[in-house]
Length: 287
Image 1 (spheres, rainbow, N blue to C red):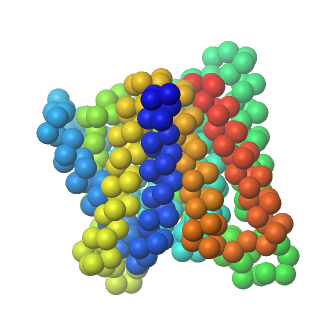
Image 2: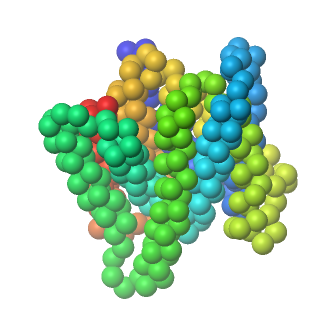
Image 3: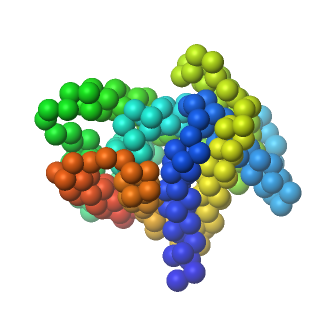
């Protein structure tokens, strides 16, 4: 039971992270900088109990990984402002699952048995249907549909950064604990660089930025949690449990952030949420 609770820690932390961001508020640059600072602070803390074997390979690959995360995260935050957390998170999670799975198939050659292909292809179909359900907007609300189209485009960009953040450490054959500090540097520098693309007058070190460090702390705790969970539960179960963050964030957006849904949209959002989570579980079975 203890290992399962540990496995749910990333789901909880990554699920409440966007809720914290939207509750505190601020510009996209405030929220991104606060998250990056929180992650950097925690990465500095890890140096007190884990000293990586410093090499240029580790530093450069980890920095690029953090920089990619900054791009993926700031575009995801921008999507929160356009379509809301409850709409953005299941779509974002679904796209990331598909993207990471594609790397798993074609780059890492993870699918080796016919059963892997049965689970994997079924998972991708289920996730795609789930994403379509959560993106559904009823007829008659042209502005909402326009926002959804813009939000989807932003989330496609976000997925590129988020997928690279997930696969670069494995491509570079890096230990998860080793990457945290140089990755944190990349996150902070990336946050400063990308903020100028989303806010005309970015606020990097204002009051709202420092308040949003709380969201960065939630992200960092989830990041550390997945490392511990993967060790205790194995990658398949650890990965699967972490994907349940989409349930926390989506329901939290509806219940706590009061993001509006018509009756039909709400039913389809919940159905889509279940499908995305189910797809995550099926993908976990292939790992």
